[in-house]
Amino acid sequence: MLKVSPSILSADFGNLKEEILSLEKGGADYIHIDVMDGLYVPNITFGPPVIKKIRNISHTPFDVHLMIHRPERYIKDFVDAGADIITIHEEATIHLHRTIEQIKSYGVKAGVALNPSTPLDNIDYVLDYIDMVLIMTVNPGFGGQKFINSMERKIKDLRNIIEDRNIDVLIEVDGGIKLENAGRMKELGVDIIVVGSGIFEAEDIAERTEKFKRL
Ligand code: DX5
Ligand code: ZN
Image: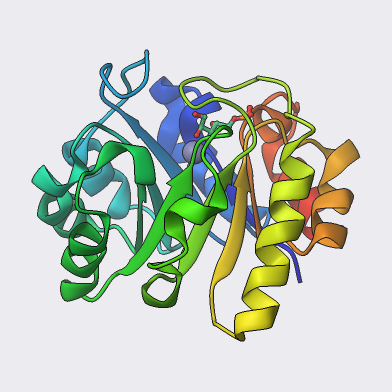
């Protein structure tokens, strides 16, 4: 079954608690938390203290997407804040394998994200060590952007590699996922869809989450 990870990037931050509870009511499998540092991406969001606070109100696994430069400096802070999956960008760290091992040493799951222009080859030799690949289907930094169509082939190629090598790695897609193309993601072999504006644009967030779940 396709899992849904709503991104709170598009939430009303003044009303975050109620909105997270609505996502849970709608059956969200994860809560996707977009951390941006204003350097790796041209936007700034929030860090460990905010995550720690929302950890108190939610039991849903936290899918933490680090869009930060040199993420190895902050892994422990995000673990302590309550992350269940920590995803770093391949482009943001020099010693990718070392940073993956660092994440895993705390007993949390490790994901690697790829920008649209980054080839799958860049993670060839670390695929066996990670739990998830996050394929960015927009350029990271903002919600509400349009899905980049050439990413379909990337998703397909990754699915084939995972099947060929018979490894246990989840495929997550992030950016521009709406009710209209979510079914297509499932066909391509995606395990988890991140949905931001596609959920928060709805009048009823819980109901919209449920709609994605039912796909
Ligand atoms: C973009 C973030 C996404 C974003 C997706 O940099 O990583 O998680 O919230 O938003 P939508 O679903 O609106 O494209
Ligand atoms: Zn994200």
